[in-house]
Image (cartoon, rainbow, N blue to C red; front, side, top):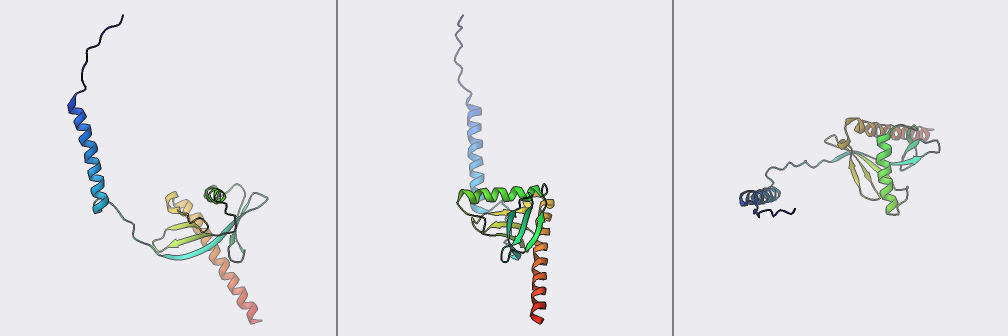
Length: 165
C-alpha cells in the first residue's frame, strides 16, 4: 500500500528568483526612503481658523456642540443624525476613557490654509484629518466651524451693545 515517492529537490531557479525579488524590493524601498525618490510630500500648512469645542450628550439622545470657553451652544445634533460625527467622538472618548481623562478638555476644530479640516483632541494630542473620510463628512464639520464663528460674532455684538448702554 505504501508507495515510495522518489526524492525530487526543489528547482533552484525559482528559489533564486524569489530571493532576488525580495532583495530588490528591499533595496528599492531603502533607496526611496533615504533619497526621497518616488515619494510624495505634503506641504506644511498653517491654521487659519480654530475653534475649541466641547461635545455634550443630552438625555434625549441629541449631542450639543458647545463653545469650550463660555459654554454657548453652537449646534444641536438631533438624535439619530450625524452618525459620522458621533462615531468620531466615540472613538476619541474611548481613548480618553482608557487614559483616565474626563470630558472637560476641549477638542480643537482646525481649518488649514490648504483647505483641510482636522479635529484635535487637546487632552490626548490625537488629531484626525477629516478629509480622509470624504467631502460630505468635511462639510458637516465645516458647518460646525461656521456656526461656532457666528456664535462668537453674535456674542461679541451683544457684549458691545451691553457696553454701549
